[in-house]
Length: 253
Image (cartoon, rainbow, N blue to C red; front, top):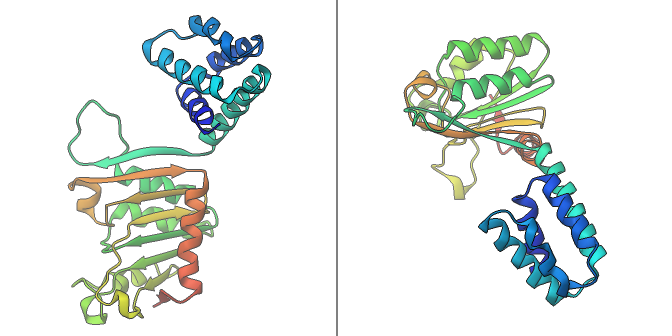
């Protein structure tokens, strides 16, 4: 049965919904797995033919009724399309373009997350300088009542790993934001730094990136990341960050 399920997943992930519905209907009309050769006309290219052949072989081994396989295909297709519509993942890239692959810019993605926030916004970065467009967007978010939390690496004068006091500067620039530091490290993490660069809003959209909150990261560096909308990832990430606050792994400064 595992092979049959694998072959169904492979078909569902690589077939248009209407074509898959046609296949399910055709299977439902068959008497037994031994009649699967009658489905050959459905596959219009070698890749589809290979996937259909795998399904036919697995069906012959499993020996389930045709109407049951037809229902499995329809159900798997519906679940796959629903899950895919719930989460969207976009590649984000700053730096030289290949001119062949469309990508989002780091600054655009970060601004989108900030603009999407209506209740809560949590951001982390190793360093943070005054990027005008980002600061303007964060100020606007505060103005519409968004609770902003920000985890930054402490300066070397405060036990951290950067020379600039980004935390002090951010507290002045965004006094309404809640700024956090990873100060009280367990022995296993002594010498560790805040290298995570993420932004997540309302558990619904998040940006995970290599880019710090700096002008070079927004414009000059080669940076990569993903913008994720919907699904479980933004929810898990937001809850994880807030749990670090609750358990006092990170503390407000």
